[in-house]
Image (cartoon, rainbow, N blue to C red):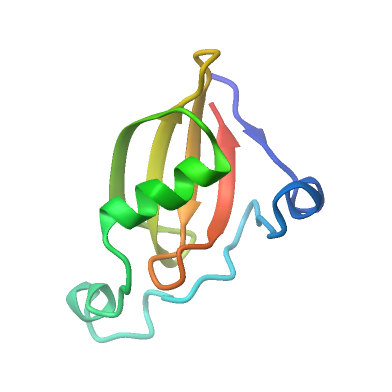
Length: 105
């Protein structure tokens, strides 16, 4: 499968936020806490709120979501299928619900 990384410049212009391909400007960096459980306790939004935030970025049907480690950060990864059948992965910050990255599968 091909992955297309949408550039931070394009997303910034379209969405008013930035995306980073290899690192995130995230709120919860793993390794700064004694355990993953401690890091997870710092989240401010739940998975439902993450899905709502992701669907504001990519319109479509959410087919999966989970809290995970990505690029050293704790993030929500939301998978969405748009109206054309394209699959997207949208990474949401678990503290402020901002988009960190959006990928087209």
